[in-house]
Length: 114
Length: 112
Image 1 (cartoon, each protein chain N blue to C red):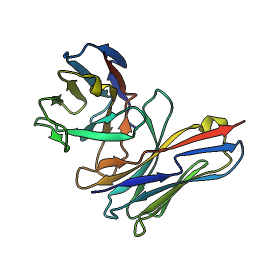
Image 2: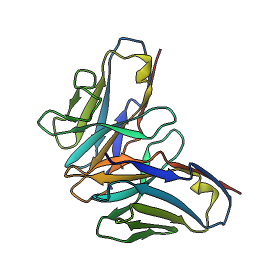
Image 3: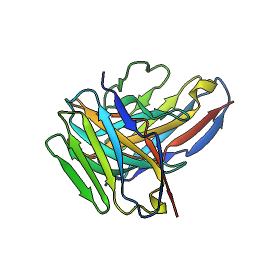
């Protein structure tokens, strides 16, 4: 199974600032995804990170707020821009090696905005 | 729009008991279904993946079944242990990208 590392593991940020979360996979994968888990809730997909092209965002999420990069087959970043307290969540990266393969997750980034 | 429901929301059992967690989904056109566990403060650990053409998958004390036509899956845990205490999440994969739609989870507590 793919091993996924996320950095930072947690952060406390000021309102109006931005934070970039990094996701590194130990092997090449075809698909990478970013999810948000709000307090007491399940996971909601933010976007699919596409290698070499713009990410595909789900309804309710926009590129200006959550810019995503994926420069190669093992690495992606998610930026949470102009943060407000409503952005306080766990942000998780996941990856899948190929079609029909299981999705694996990193340990997440716990983000608190003051 | 796919919706995934997990019942019960929480479950507390004594050690050694066999138990069943339930997952239902509204759109049967799924690619596969995956069960995860999430420990407090941690990410998700993949437990079992069932392809849409399969009926069940087993791993150790865990057995997951899938009835796609009725939109249901169950996760059976045999001889439960305190270390099984966690939140169990069911997720269905949709479409070509296989993006996952999650249920809200079942929080399991196994008491020694």
